[in-house]
Length: 100
Image 1 (cartoon, rainbow, N blue to C red):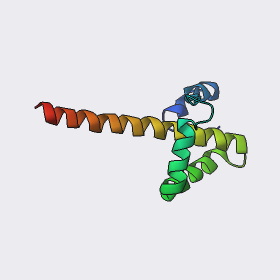
Image 2 (image 1 turned 120 degrees about the horizontal axis):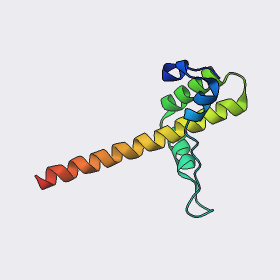
Image 3 (image 1 turned 90 degrees about the vertical axis):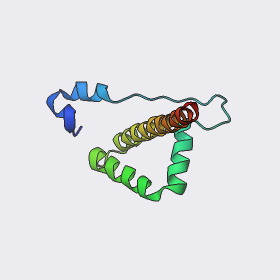
Image 4 (image 1 turned 45 degrees about the horizontal axis):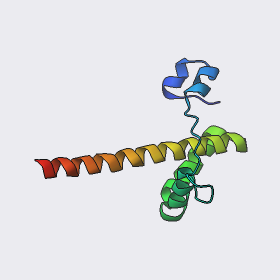
């Protein structure tokens, strides 16, 4: 595993454990998970982001397809969390404007 940032000073085992193991399951089996929905959104409407995710996964995962898939899923999980946090922040700021 190629490490960077704060992971540079810790062991590979610890670095592996710092990655979020994000498992999603849809509410109903016939519906896509939030990760599936995020990938659909990115792949259809954000080609530049899709390109950057693929570039980063290839840079850090190399030719190992499983590693690239793990990196891609981790970045999609981060995208979902950040998108949700942004939507919550926007809603909270609108509420603050209404209140006062």
